[in-house]
Length: 294
Image (cartoon, rainbow, N blue to C red; front, top):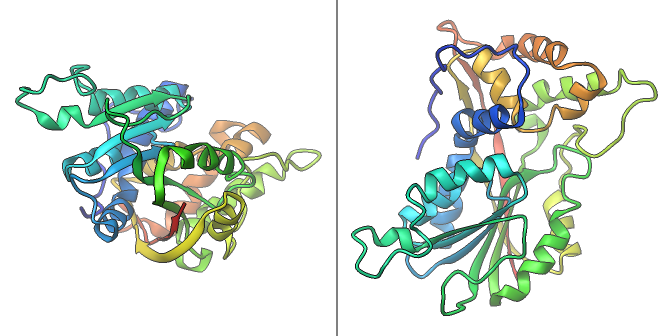
């Protein structure tokens, strides 16, 4: 699956305040697909297929699960964002029948998905079969404290997996390899306009080389390989790019320090170097993944 330019949504106003539902839709319809090359690279390396029982921590609106299910995997997703999870249900459980579809169902893939809201993960199948793959596809390393909740989540999930199960963590690549890093610096600058400067979780910071390894060590996981994947961010226009980027949450501290309209204005200005003659926006990025075992 290759990154594609996202079509601008008719009638959308990039300067309008975004409620939780709008923000989740912006993530699902604009931003989430930018990470599709990362999902595909990980699944190729892990040989995801019918024998895979995957737990997706922070599954968001479910695109990574959908890709895995299309390969034949049994997938369970957990997320605390109700709006994103509702969109995942619409994608994965359109008729509310995936969890309990009868054996004679004409769509056997519908028996391979389960979604849980902010609770303890459950075994995928009715037979209590444990997971053999745990994924975290929400990239860390670009915001202060963005891995704090991940360590206890990994520790809770590990006992539900087979011994020696694979765990895949993902994060942003080096800032010099990520064009989006220059735009994300706007978040840090605007957050610093608060008096005193804000340092709460969620504030943007440069990616550190060992972010993923640090999480693995604290969660008691053993690293077993890594990789880098090119994930260009492509948008139909600046307005779509602003909406997609703000849906990530990396600008939340800046919005609290100033206001949404100011953040949108300055992000749009920072995007100008990446706008092409036809009005589209294209930013090359590299993301990392770390393969671990329980």
